[in-house]
Image (cartoon, rainbow, N blue to C red; front, side):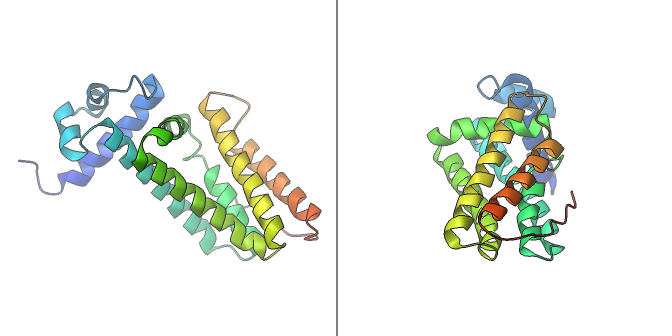
Length: 204
């Protein structure tokens, strides 16, 4: 009989172990046994709490998405302008904790499996819809709706592209470098849309 209060601890251990296993072995070679070995827990515990590897990956990605949401919300709380709110999205996505190799490997596994697993596909749609909304709303305060949509899609393509390259081990792609390029792209897009000079509070 598990001790009272152990469930969240065990679930966290297993999700952390999943991230490490995917980083070491790739998703296809990440087995329940390997995850259990890294966590120091029996494979039966994984089936008890999650049902299997796919369910565990979904839970792991939900946890990472929640961490991303919390970081963005914290940054949003101190944002003063629409431009600051846009920057909160960019900075959260390229923050060190989200841009570590282990986390990027988990995201790469997530993207590769999402087309074939409905729970992961729903998470991917949620992430994309939320991120685009968080970009479009403040962009719409600065430029027209059509331009806001175009700039938001451009920034999302940059975020996903940099994550993908970094997940494959490209050493020239770092969080600070990617953030600087995204900010420059934002400024250029706003200037082309006629937004005029704007002050970006670069807090990250």
